[in-house]
Each structure stands twice: as structure tokens, then as C-alpha cells.
Image (cartoon, rainbow, N blue to C red; front, side, top):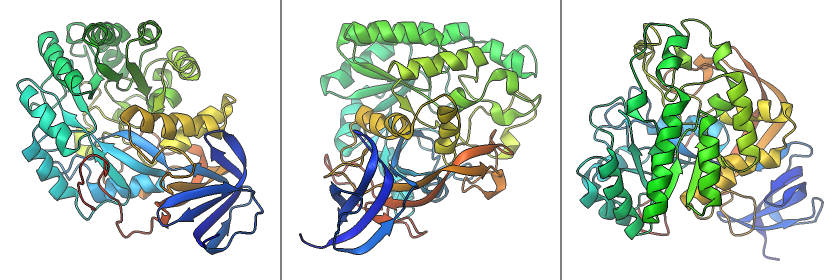
Length: 442
């Protein structure tokens, strides 16, 4: 055997086939093979994690980096540092809240220029579908975006307006024509209203689950009629599960995700005035949370991604009616989900499927999402038993605002390898995809 560059051994190697003792061989940037845990393998570096777990690098397809334009909210350097610290080796950046939003090729070039040289993990990009930019969708796809995000209700920023039903149809027809993917923020604006007051309960009542359900129904009806492929973002309401399950059973090409905050937090636990918990759609009840876990277990929801949407602390005031809505959790998603998943009887293999394999498959990100030969050597040494006290000030997120502050989570990332190389503070992430059009290294 030609000498390997790296071997990592673990009695808890999490592969697509399950958790087992194995040695993972790496040559260059790729996994070359999985061998017996104690196999004698010639390698320049041989690391034995023993009973610590070896996970595939997570794939987070829902991250708002916000650079350029709102770089004081977050940026590529800080966001990708946080990602690596949380075991995430691939992110897809959303087309907002950067300025300009990624709705034209010119705007995409501006974003690439801003990101170059700053990325500590691999980074791909979503384009945006907004009123009037149907002609820009195919050129953006050619340039290398993974798909297109749209809103059905106001996005919170004026430069990224929502699509009404007729506009959504036009965009879906265009995207279906070239085999693309639309990812949808699905809330029906007709059922949304301004909160009646400053409390969390009043905010929650202003964005009912019925708004999500009605919007999801409209999306799957259009997708089925047109033959489009769609993905529903950040499902917070279990009211959506019946609609999604029926559409999937009926052959509609629809997938759906939820987020760590919907699976680990609950409305009953939101402290009064703690606006770090505000997001859209909102964190709902404990009973609703249990139903989301059931939907995840049944595969109706297939992905768990962060929807990392940070902001400065001065936008998280004065109350739930006026504060910016978004949860910062990119660094904490793995520990948060493992804390709750392990309590509910799920294993690391389940977590790897929800947070790595399925997001990579949904977005068609090649070479990511699992510890198997031929994939990039994106690997994470993880201690599933370690206590993980959360101090917002010690996170890599640019702004220390998170609802997890003060909580003790379970599980700690010890080392993250990106394409066989430890993430060590020197940016060596790449722009993705390399298989459609070369975007260049960062």
C-alpha cells in the first residue's frame, strides 16, 4: 500500500452504515478507505481517538453570514471559525442579509470577493429569487449557486422582498426548467400580524402555525403541478407535517428541515424579555417540539441546520415586538442536538444523518456528508460525554447573543479536519462547487 498521509482510529467511527470501530485512511484531501481499528497502516500521522467518536464534518445549508454590507452582524472569518469549532466543515451562505443580496451574478461576484481568503471551512452559496429577477436565475445557476431562496412573507429587509403566488409560480417554472432547487421561507403573510404587545406570548400569537401550514400547502401544490423540486426551510410548526407527508407520499419532490432551537427550546421556557430567543418562525410549545422530533424520526423532516441569523445586541432590543428575529447558534448546533437527541434515545448515527448526510444530499453537495472512500476527509473528533457550558462571550460568533448562554450542553468538539487538514486558524476553506464551475480557492 502506498503510504497514507493520515490515519484516524476510533472505536466509535460514525459511518453511513452505522457506528463501528474503524481506522480511516486519508491520502491528500480524500478518504481512501476504512480499515479494521487496529490494522497496521503506514501513515505520516496516526491518531488514535480510542473511545472518542469520529464524526463526518457537518454540513450546514442554512447560514446567514451577512458579509458584505452587514459585516458588523457577522462575517466570513468569524462565521467559519464558529462553524469549525462546532464541527461544521461545509456551510451554504444565504443570499440575504448581505448588501447587495445575491440576486444577480454581479452581486454574487461582490460576495465572492468579500469572502476570498477568509474561510476556515468550505463555503457554497444560495442565490435569491425576488420579484423581477427571473432572468437572473439561470446565469446565477451557471455561475455556481446551489439553488434559490425565496420568501412568501416579508423578509425583514427591504432589499429582499417576498414573492406573491404568481411570482412564485414564474420562478418555480424557470428553476424547474434547468433542474434547479427552490428553498422557501414558508409563512403566509395573510395570517401574520404585528404583535399586540411586547411579550413573547404576544409575539408567538402573531405568527401562528397555521401560517406555516397554509404556505407549505401552496408551495407543494405548485411544485406538484409544475414538477419543481422544493425544500421547506426552518419548519417550526408541527402543523406542517401532515401536508409535507402527504406531498412526499404523492411523489412531490419536497424535502424539509428544522433547526436546533425548535428541537431543544420551547415557548414555555422563554424567560420574559430574553429577546435572544426571538426568531421567525417562532419557537413554539413543548408539545409541538415533541411532534417535530417525531417528524424527524419518520423522515418527514430530513435535515437539521442552524438558520444562523445573528445580529448586534443593539438590534435585540427593546422587546419581542421590536427586536430583530434571528438565532445565533452555528457553533452550538451539534452539542445542542446531541444533548436532546441522546436524552430521547437517538444515537450519533442519527445526528450525523440529520446534520451531515441529508443536508449534503438535499443540496447535492458532492464529496461531503459521510465517512466513506472517495469523500473529502472532513472529520470531527467528538467527546459525546463532555459537559459543554455555554458562555456567549467565548464563542467565535461576532456578536455574543445566543439563547444558549448559561446552559450546560452535552458533547464537545475536540478537533475538526477539513479535507484531511486540521482547522488551525489559517483559512484553507474553498468555494463550492468545484464540479460545476470553478469558483476558486478562498
